[in-house]
Length: 153
Image 1 (cartoon, helix red, strand yellow):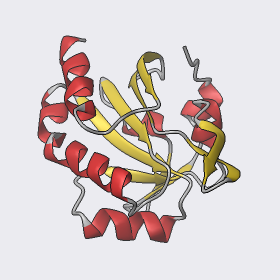
Image 2 (spheres, rainbow, N blue to C red):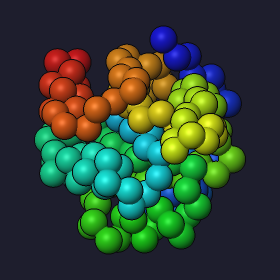
Image 3 (cartoon, rainbow, N blue to C red):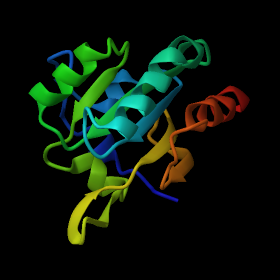
Image 4 (cartoon, rainbow, N blue to C red):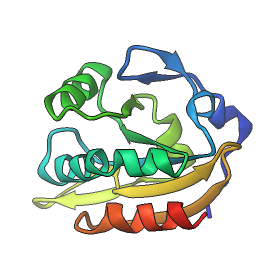
């Protein structure tokens, strides 16, 4: 299980609303952080749409949602606006969250290896304690599973 340090929890990050701040400042009782490889790719788009559709249910469970990738702020903002996402995306260009949650792994595509985000989701509490994690996520049905876990907390 991942352990998030106070430094990571309070680290200044870029959000798609233009603000700079920490995840810790924006969490109510719980938060879902879902890490995705690249904005505007099919799997990432479907996952983000699924979280958008269930966003009110997450809020009703006192849980904020954040999407995180290593894409730059402008790309993240365009992605959010294109699909009218009701939650914030984080432009983790310095890989602070990605490294802390250990989601960057060696990947292989078309015979080339590279380092990239492995689709992963984490439920954390207001102190940054990881309560549940999913790694190597398959998109279909995933958001419903995350919501079930959050509702049981």
